[in-house]
Image 1 (cartoon, rainbow, N blue to C red):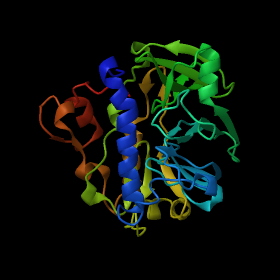
Image 2: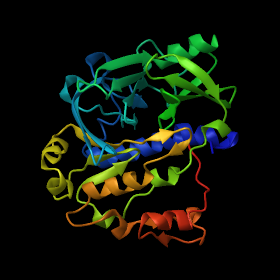
Image 3: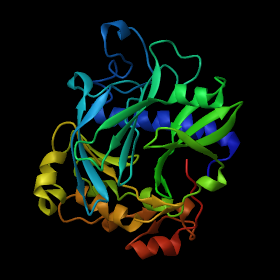
Image 4: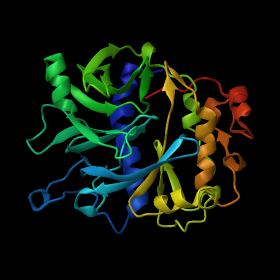
Length: 326
């Protein structure tokens, strides 16, 4: 379920900032990039500090993998470099039809009326049904203010899973108003808000399937982050994908390429959970399976202790159902 109101600020702001910070330190190295982690992209920004800063980017090339349960994306970043800030990690949401990327430049962790003229909160929406992946962008801060006719809000971003309701695809926008969380469905084709949803209506079954990752010892320089996989400085190409799909492996090995889970959700249920878990095998050491080091955390196990998972059926057997979406 959606987190309780007294805990949500820490989940949507603090946890995103912490997770993003960890990602940046891992990706760029703690010591060598401490100055870059507080940044700036132009001379006018040089002495400014930002909590979040994602440079503009277009999809240069993409390929679906693993029977369309994953996608490799090579990005064309503005100024040909990945943005660096306290939290410049990309928050990417993907389903079979769309990829949604949060693009923000914020001094605080959330967008609000306190933003200065050089701050923004956009969503870049890429149509994956078109091989050219055309992009539409939307100023979600302005969208929410105009929709609510109220700027006394804070925009926290998007929920991790794109929703498929009927024939429409949606991203869920999360805001707070007077410390109360509210959620809205943004239609990814019309770019209009179709409805507000309650916490109960946003519950997703089988979310545990996208929150499990294998043991670190089984990795070969490819690390999981949020809904994707990125290459660390230890990456040497010794992964299963090299042999299962050599052409896609070559694309993934390019400097600005990343892999993402294609989460297929319909009417409140993730329907490709088994395939998403198996997807991680592609990015592990050659010959290693995701189940060689997969465990269910004690807080999610009916046994009350860390539980070894040997196959997908074990998840259904031991999972206690206590994970909520956030």
